[in-house]
Image (tube, rainbow, N blue to C red; front, side, top):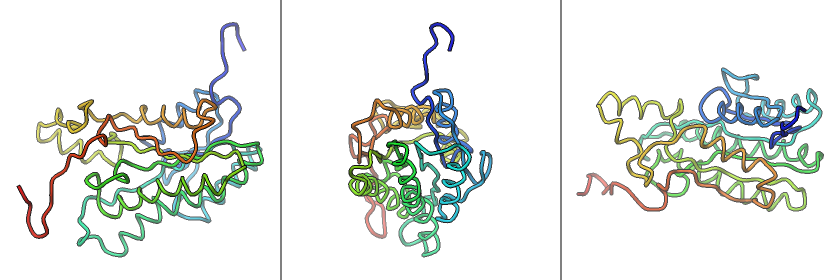
Length: 256
């Protein structure tokens, strides 16, 4: 190490990030590597490893391969997710619900199940799951997506309790509107209509967020600086969820 150079905040840590092919996952992988971590990025495409994050078999294999190749595991960021669009509760069928819950909720549960024992063997570490402000209240996503993210917020609380004494911390991040592959259609639609300036106008910051802003939140939760943060859902949304902006829907019509 040269004079004046300092170790990164995640120096020596071995990490897995799902959904690492783009958006929040990609930004986090780049940041964690810059902070000294060895990162295995997983996604269906565009990452180090091709993985179906909603499959227990795939998640288990990912963890085992990482441990075999790198000698252990310290961090797991279960970030992969799908939106399912904005169809209403009468429009989403059983198959849509099953797929959204499989990837967004069952996937993180399997990540915790298979990563935690290996992280414990290393003396402890952190598991982080991407939730959403949609999981806090309605109005930020479709029914299945919203339900899945509410489940994630509760999942980290349950996991934190069930991992008592392990020194494995489990937390969630609840992003607001962030420009990623999942939300690109919102941005593209606004730009096509000449309404780009209105993106994020419902939050006090009056802008959308960037993937790097969520990556820094994930870095904090992964680092020793968050050593006493456990079972928590960290909201990073520009202040959107501090109020209740909404369009009231009356069954069968829209109320003024």
